[in-house]
Length: 444
Ligand code: SF4
Ligand code: SF4
Image (cartoon, rainbow, N blue to C red; front, side, top):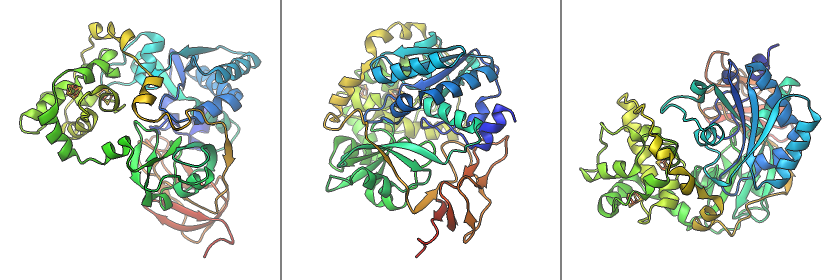
């Protein structure tokens, strides 16, 4: 079986957040393979755990992919991650082959795919294009580990999830895919805030959800973090504001200082994205300027609204809103690259420590060492894991399933992934939210 077939059979998707099916990246050839271990969102520590404790599997996965693509493998992580660098150095030394470790500075968003490519190669991904256009394939460190496990015939049935924020004992939780958010928070000692909200992902790019979702939300293969924040935290309050209110605020309070544009990481790699101009477009009646396609180049990192803007405005949310309208109209981004913008970049990268202080996240640990293994009696395994189509269920309610059995499938040529049973038991329900599996003896 080829590596591509092994990775497809194991249902591997990008574990860094987007969930792009990994087998679709293995069609090569490529010049560089970048293994992304930068994990730049504050409070998240799952990838760091993988690098410290499973560096051998990360390196084995990287070597196999590099060989399949004919690429040179670079593993990138932060210069400040001493224990991770030591573990990876030892793993590389123990395995013959060309794998190079490339430390990068600790800034946000150093782990953004296109920012990392620029940092390591000095090249700009074509606006609206893919890294493949530069001969680059990027996979996350946890994905690389999952590739090594796939080569041993092990499908993706578990993942490490950082549970952090307003919880009693922050932890990296080793959980089956589909573990409920409520069980993950309980594994971290429970919420400590009286009015908690859930964040699926990191504090900047994650999705803010009401606490009532905790008993329904089954975590997927691309979910590396689950945070709890007090409902009155400034990030939770900002996420809760409706876009109509944000548009009104933009019209009345944007002073066109351009700080949002000056610090935008995609602007700084040379793309034509100028959030201050998108904000200016709202002055003309709160609408979207169909001639201004800059929003299509936004990676939604949140730096403009959560760090740059001195007026507390939300350029990112307005850009998201405009992006939806532009996409629906079939607009395409400007293909221009501006080298003069790249020249401004060295002094404009935002150190992660300053970001953490600005976001009032210093009260929570930015490094989590505690590991908890979670074995719940019930999981809700999602049918969709990030981008791509939902898999088609191939099991029915009442059916017994074994650990690792395929329970939902897609075709090899489709953007999507196979889904496997993450615990052994009986299917309790098949629905839009996912496939509910309960261990035998626990069905009410
Ligand atoms: S969220 Fe803001 S800073 Fe980030 S890429 Fe989009 S416009 Fe730029
Ligand atoms: S940083 Fe804020 S005030 Fe300044 S241009 Fe951008 S949105 Fe307007």
